Length: 482
Image (tube, rainbow, N blue to C red; front, side):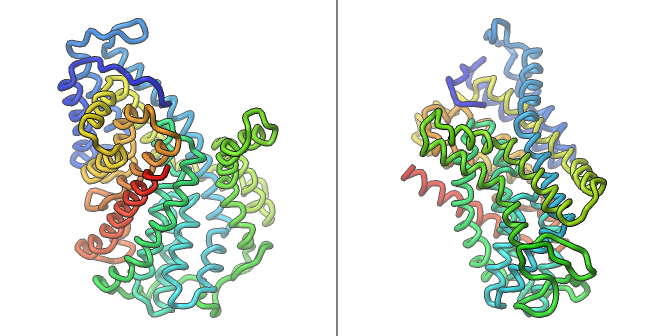
């Protein structure tokens, strides 16, 4: 939703608040208790909001009465608009990530960075690996990809598994929460009408200190609280401190153990950063160059998120495919196999767009804006708190982002582009607060690290909380100067 005039409430304030809370409660109960798929939960939650809002309403919208038929239309519109704006980017991101993984490019990055690090620098190196791999990949995919490396690095360097794992997880999680083109930040950008280039730049700027604090620094404490040795039954062809093992470095395609060609380190990093640089180039051009300037026109086109990711996928098909000797069939199979895994995510995100549109259409965001102004509450803090509450209740960072950004959509009027982008980052920070038993990521980390529940809370849950709070502090600090 783009910024603009606030939507006028279609009913009394108390009724709209009850409807909003009821809709959120429906989503929470259906996801956390009934274990229903979030897609259906968000659909039913949106309809609950609308059903309560229309009771006794005599408001007219677009020349017609605000009734349940209008609610269905609004939901469908939000669903379609979100699919068109965000869904395309998620699909392209999945294609890119699959090519990166299948080509061995991700392994090349890991081998090069970890292979050149001393044992004392390994937590910092793994934080960098997690952040770089997490830039194009979903959190779960990055974790599965990096777990064998975490095991082997910890065992060979005789360092606690937690001391190596926590920095890696921090890098993955920070990228997932703060940096587009991940679904959460993209959805918040779309809901709030934020500038993607500015949000991307601020997200990367914010992610660096967040990863440092929640990763290597907090990892020291976490390793003392829960000392865990790496399992001895897992191996990986990665080298530590330059010892024998995997491939290290190179700008050209290299052969890994077993004779399988994979892209060089420089090629891989350049390809991964290509869409980021294109989108940041657009943001800089919009600030530094006058409208109508030829260079700005070109950069605006190339930096459009859809175009930037499309270019990245096409380049990756060469650098991660044809350039390594792959056939057209092999490249096509890799791209095709990326899509089934994100089908559920696409449906959840699109349903989240419909849920958001219903909330906005009731005018509850206007009521929230008026309340925030009367109470003199920082909109950044309010955005973070809303995301935290939904995150704790549902265990889903995506649902927390959907709901919080939907509720905050009415408060962006009058904010600068930088402030709207900071609100996106405040919501992203809140959406990862204290992962616990209702979060699938909690159990994924628990099983991969072979921890019990209390140990997982002391490590993973605590790390997510440190990451979230650090992000909020930095957002509030930046808000003072932007």
